[in-house]
Image 1 (cartoon, rainbow, N blue to C red):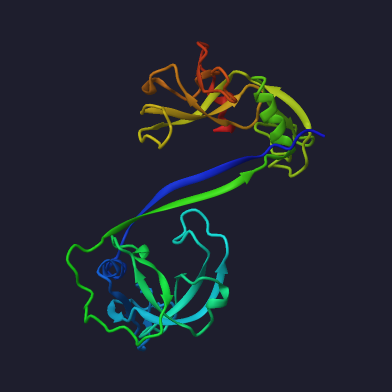
Image 2 (cartoon, rainbow, N blue to C red; image 1 turned 90 degrees about the horizontal axis):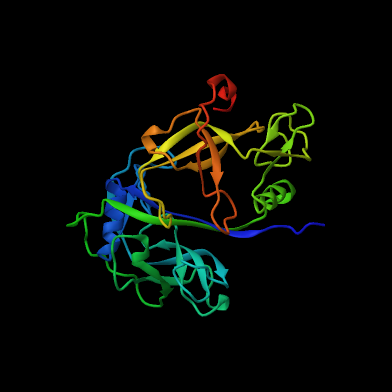
Length: 313
């Protein structure tokens, strides 16, 4: 039985978003060690605050300060913190209903073990030493046996309001390509492109998925395609990607390899970006030790007629 391929993959990007007046006040308040909620038309106080009542859909904008002390309403123990989580030692995820609030705020509770936390326990905010206007300005919650915290009297108006945030998004996972794509990847190591033919419609798909996306039947017949192909459509990239050593602008396009009925992705090189065009005939360029073509370059052949690739655009 052939070896099952697998590899660790990471999808990561910074998510940038602007803030409305309610969220702006909430995060700016955290920077100033103030916790703000928003009051609904029927007198409930929601923390964290939202701009619309989740029950009535009313617009909400009446900011209300609540205390930095509260009560644990429910919790779960995290015995093995992951990268990027607030604490690097085991902790509890807890819903904390702050004094003056009618809802729970999800955050981290720093306690030595699961036996040290229980529903109904009193806690208080531990503020981060350096604060910038983010939910991480609350470093965590900690047990508290004293009286409730006093309010500052804030009305939600501060100097230098936070108007936007950048939140990193990251997904770590292990990818296993399966039988069909493993065959495709193994063929690439020999600088060949291999697809699979559908036994029903007879179309050849590259890269193969093990089943025909049109007919829904399993595929197993391998078919070698290319190496040359036709550029069916493309875009000009003007924003440089992190950790990608390619100067902008550059062209990225869909390439229908000869004999394939599905276009694959590839970078187009060896030609000025403003001379790239649909129908351009291209061939792969490999680098020493490369596991896949580095890019595709013009072959010098006449452009393909549109009718020969229009179904693949």
